[in-house]
Image 1 (cartoon, rainbow, N blue to C red):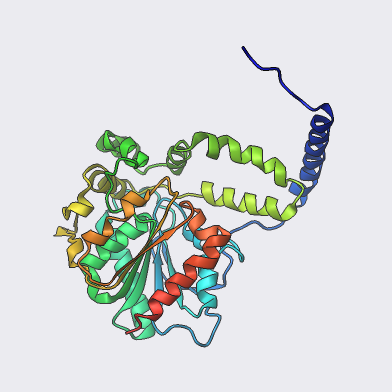
Image 2 (cartoon, rainbow, N blue to C red):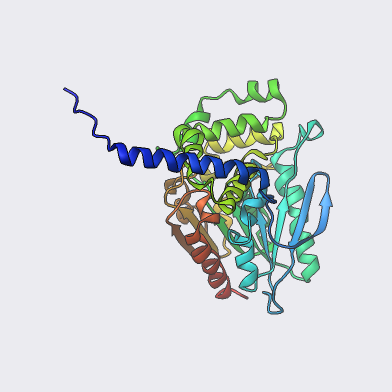
Length: 356
């Protein structure tokens, strides 16, 4: 037997009136919204090759670290989540702390890039970007910060070209791709990736975005838009919302061959942690990584659950391994207020103790 609904008519009318006023204000605010592009920090282009760009963020202090950080982001999104807006920027906070920061922008692959492999990305473009930073600072070794898929690339690079690195930082980086709570891995494990790539060529960004959004269909496809009503009368919050939406849907297509190898070797074969991945016919052995490693993961990450990131501790050969857990999600680790207070400072302090 159902209980009767207890609705306070006065309160209901007040909520309806508030909703109406927010919609009216939102109509005006949406018409007058300012620039909501991403990429907040001043930067200069220091190297370009094909679709790839290497950016250096303009240092904010004369006491910038002698050994720069190169950020390697994932291929599946543009890298500007690390510099979304002035008050939500991992890059800006690192610059304020005196770090010298570079970033690889992978660009937007087209049909000319259909046959690019992981070797092309990791031992080609990425290696040449590392060399550019080394040469600009007259250093043999630099610091590398790899994020998500870019973290997996960075682990491969550290195993194969570790003599060019001083320290390695991984953020929300999967290492064991077959943990029980890795929903994305379960989805891809039975996928006929050969048929997929042979049919499509490059993998469309819209298809990739749809897959990620359906991992949390209610939260990412409905709830956030319902919640938008609550901020429609706040121009700043509308701008923030639109900036995030623009970043989410401004995604590159995926080069077919690189996608094929990453899905088959990493997600389906779980070869990274097994030591069976081959890049350019050379086996990637994580035990060969002996440089200091800082592994940062998010406790509520639905794309890279902590169980997928923590196995790095036993996989690498270094005795200087540090782990940092962050109370947040896959995106919150860059943009939340907690992240701004905790993550850049932790990276800066960790590097400061390893300045050799």
